[in-house]
Length: 432
Image 1 (cartoon, rainbow, N blue to C red):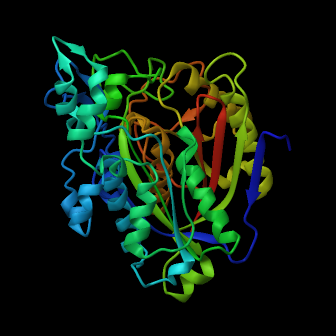
Image 2 (cartoon, helix red, strand yellow):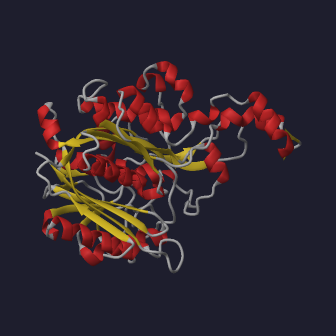
Image 3 (cartoon, rainbow, N blue to C red):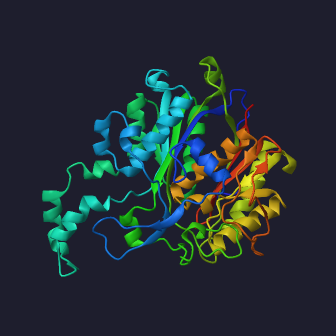
């Protein structure tokens, strides 16, 4: 094994299992609504209207409409110190805990922890609009006045609202969770990385229960105004079909926002308290293949090595894997590289991607995509890839499209990628 890769297999009789899950997505404010929309082939990507005071801008993206933090956050006084991303994280985590029958006091406080994925959270544009206007005249920004105006007019807890690690902190406070508390920030592999960090915390006997979550909003107007992302599509012909994973006519991705969470615990601990194991995190692999020819150029090799590691460590044949849940986001280079890496290990294996429906939330995409496969597997069908119409010649894989696929075995693989050449794969076995 090279210096750039690592892999692990859980072989203990006391496996780490999932006992609860929850989500708030552009397709629904709970997992049931979300999964049913995926089965219908619904796309949440659309033309986004600007916030008040942002003139002349339009974007395509997938946003969560109708979210009311008062429904999802308790106590309500905590809302004022949570930005939107943190509110979403709290809501999905509480759904997962409810499903697992966990609340404050259910578990020894020192034996329950939290780990979330995260990334930079930019301020709500409405929080800084007035200050920007005070520093501007005739369309020009007077930067020399910013410090004075910000100090006098900024909400005092502004930074506390938007720190990426506050999602894990607020959930930990609500549950009186005094165990390990962490936040993983590795771009597109962040949420699967958070899952694996939690698994290893439990395996090291530092906790019996870990709450794992992810949250991100790439449709934050402050972020979209910067528009640093290099992979957005320029095709606005039909916003609902703008993101086309593995499709011959794909032209880029679209931003999204999402939050999801799961509860992980030892199987023996779950059984003792009467919780039902939903899924087993059976094996994982993390690989980095440096780019040698631009963005995504390391992805093919990273994908291939990740899949090879998983098969070797889990001791499974190709026939025992139901499908691959890919990271494809509609980019020309990224989708092609990932598809070629998959085909080298799993020729013709059914493969799905959900970014056509949800957009790309980057650090938060992996977990909700994992959940979409896991929930579908438990229902006996895998939702199809939205907006995949015609397979591209440079994506030589068997894409699950148009209709759901019937489940044929109990295990699936979820992949997450970064443009820099990092890949994480998780092999999951659904529990009966």
